[in-house]
Each structure stands twice: as structure tokens, then as C-alpha cells.
Length: 393
Ligand SMILES: Nc1nc2c(ncn2[C@@H]2O[C@H](COP(=O)(O)OP(=O)(O)OP(=O)(O)O)[C@@H](O)[C@H]2O)c(=O)[nH]1
Ligand SMILES: [Mg+2]
Image (cartoon, rainbow, N blue to C red; front, side, top):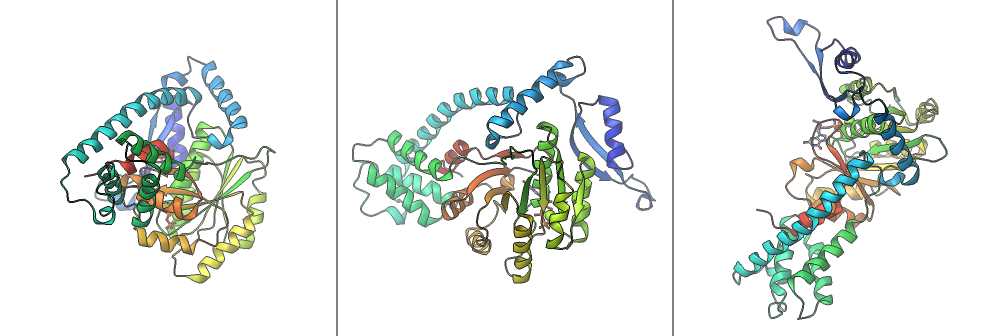
């Protein structure tokens, strides 16, 4: 514990060494009668990986070098993992892929076998006599349960029905649907760092309270700690009293600078101060759909920033209706990538397919909890597609 974040982190580094990874930090007040008069202290949760301990002096450098090479060649695939971790995951992923697919098919086959004749109304007629009608109906029902919009679910099922003949079996139907859905979800695209050494400017926008600042902090932490990039932060959110403080706390913990701007015309100068950075992340205030002047200001800010990438942050807990409203409000954005937050709070992922289908914009990250920096990952299209096709209770 320390009186401020920097002090607390220094203590951790003295105890565990320089390679300690900060997992979480929080401000706590000491317990006791007069606790409200005492300054809060900062509690740091840290871990140390044996592979990075002082005994293996050369290992970290090698890892960083490998990572740097990867950054140059495939910058769009950056996903916060080292190469060896990625390889191991890939093997595990391929092993699981076959098993999962089989389990899913078996599950659906059983559902089809046991389902009585009360099939879902929207796809009931005209398909009942076809051998694969029950299979498609089951998939349709699963998509609806996962909150895929009815219109989209129908289109998917119809596309498959047109292609598969009477002789088709469950495997063909499932793999065709799988291919169509994973094709719609597409390959996720994350931050692509510029190659000319100039900072890549990224701006985060979205409705209030979806997790923009937390997600920005997760990305900042991963680019700084895992990818060893030089990160600068800017916040344009001076509307909420605690907003600046929130980002400053993360910046302090991560040892990176944060500039505060009060009007869109200040953004250029704030960016200029970061000419030595690899990445500049800009946080914005949450915007309610109904406030036109706020939206106009956000537009000015995005234009003035000349950002290389805009990320629209949406919560996966948003209802279909609200999500469509939000999308039309943010339709002034020409190009953007999608981040979905709070996957841990939502049982279903339909919103992700719906949004991708409606906007055609690339998916990027999803976040899965409140913990900075760990609860973020690049969208796993395979997992997402299987979730959408699988049944949920
Ligand atoms: N469960 C869960 N909570 C999250 C996640 N991401 C963010 N949160 C929480 O959501 C709340 C709002 O997060 P912020 O990052 O402040 O959201 P914001 O979009 O910046 O909010 P405004 O700036 O007020 O518009 C906080 O309590 C976060 O801890 C997530 O992936 N899962
Ligand atoms: Mg915020």
C-alpha cells in the first residue's frame, strides 16, 4: 500500500522486482472511527511471472524483440499476447474447435430428435415437409434466443434453405450457417500502428456509461506493458466531475501522461505535445442520443483530431431497439470500428451480429469485466458464431 499510486507501485517493484505486473489498483480508506478524516491509501494487486524473473535476464528482451517484429509485419493482428502464448492458444483452439463443433451438432441433433411438432411460427409453414426443416427451425430458434433480430435470423435461415437440398444432413446445414455467420462477423480489426513513426491517433466515442474510459485504460495498459509502446492519453470529458480524475488515476498508475482539453479546438495542440508517442488515445464524454448540441461538439472534436481510427464503444447489454437508435445517432461517423463491452453481463451475443450486419463496420475488441488491464480480448469469431448457433437455457 502507498499514499498515492506511484508510491504504491514503487513499493511493489521494490518487493517483487521490476518485472512485476500490476493487476489491479484501488483506493481504500483505512478502517476505524476517524477513517473519513484520513487520506485514502492505494492498494496494488501485482503478480510476477517466473519466466520474467531476474534469473533469466535474456528472456524478456527476446520476447520484446519477437513482439516488435510481429508489430511490424502484422500490426492489425495485435492482440496483447506474446508469440508463444498465441501458438499455444492456437493449438488448444484447434483441438477444441473440432470437439466443440461435434458437441454442438450432437446437441442440436438431440434437440431436433426430441422436439415435438410445435415448431416456431415464423418458419413453420412450407418447410415442414422438408427433411432438414426441423434442423433449420432449431437453429432459427437458437438465433432468436440469442437475440439475433428476427429479420436477420430469417435471412440467414432462408439463405441456407435455398442452398441445401433435401438430401442435406445436419452437418451440412450447420457448417453452412456457421460459414455465413462467421463471414458476416468478419475478421476483427484492431489498432493498426503507423509505420512512419508518427503517433497513431485513436478516439473512443459512445453512449454514457458503456465503459469507454475503462476500455481505453485496458488498451493503454496492454500497449504499454505488453507491447512496450509509448502511449499518451487525452481526455475531452470535462463534463462529469470525476471523469478527468478517473483517467488521471489510470495514467498515474501506468506512468503515462494525460492532457485535458476543454474544447474541440484544443485537440490539435494536445496531440502535438505527443509527437514522441506511438499511440495517442482520446477519451470523450458519453453522449446521450437526444442532445444535438453535444453530438455537434463530438463531431467537431473528431474532425479536429484527424484521428486515424474511431472506435464506437457499445455495451452488449443494450436492447435491440436501443441499439438501433444508437446506431442511427452515430451514423454521422464515416468510418469506425466496434467495441462491445460488458460481455460478462450479457448471456447472449445477438447484438454483435445485428450491429455488424446493419453497419458493416469491423469488429475489434470485446470486454469481459471491470478489471484493468485483463478483461479485454480481440473478438473470437469462431467462439461467437458457435454461441449464436448454440442453444441457451
Ligand atoms: N461488468 C463490466 N463492467 C464494465 C466493463 N467495462 C466497464 N465496466 C464498468 O462500467 C462502468 C462505467 O465505465 P466507464 O469506463 O466509466 O464508462 P464510460 O463510457 O467512460 O462512462 P461515461 O464517461 O460516463 O460516459 C464502470 O463501473 C466500469 O467498471 C465490462 O466489460 N464489464
Ligand atoms: Mg468515461
